[in-house]
Length: 279
Image 1 (spheres, one colour):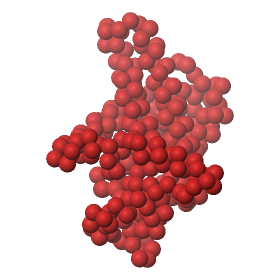
Image 2 (cartoon, helix red, strand yellow):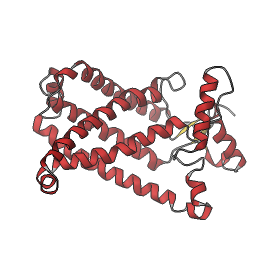
Image 3 (cartoon, helix red, strand yellow):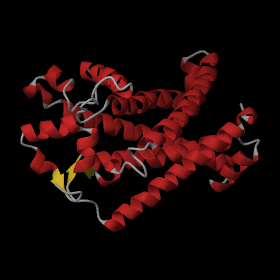
Image 4 (cartoon, helix red, strand yellow):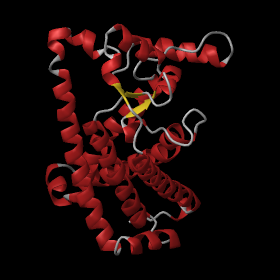
């Protein structure tokens, strides 16, 4: 096997979901920061970039509705993956190696990772998903409903006030901003580091953009997955070639542009954190 052999890891639809989330999340981060930091030069620059203070709010609302729609479509997609599991054994499939739901094997891999890091044992033989990748996925998935519900409450204050006490609206706005800060901090620090900057990923983990990863990297990071594919006779079917050079250059430019925007927002958000507007 040579470096031209790649293993397909993500479908086209899954990559579209990821791209959609990237774009909408960056728009929400920019428009949200522009209003929260409006009393600073940083916030005023962001506000000017999106067309003004009111325009930032309109863009934030509509993009939020798009994100909710995307979340619902993604959830529907997950259901289409779950339904066929009845024939193979629902619980067994739901906790199987192709599932993103955490299981006992993840706990064993975490312990093995600790032992390996201390030089007290071999490296864990990760399957299709590592425990970190599962945590990464669910951290985003469960944060979306919280942002959606609190965002809708703030978007429709009269409806919210007619159904709940007035203080509930204040709590909704606070929780929305707290979760937004947590989400941006996690994505711009942890997710960006794991995807781009850690030694085994640098200069970029290309799998979500290209849909595949080189066989050598698959054997290094997911040896258990590759071994299982061979045993199940799926290995040959999932083999593919490397991405075209022009496409690779395109997603490198896009990926590092997104990375730069995220780091810019993170650094300035920290610098101007004492000047946050609460209005």
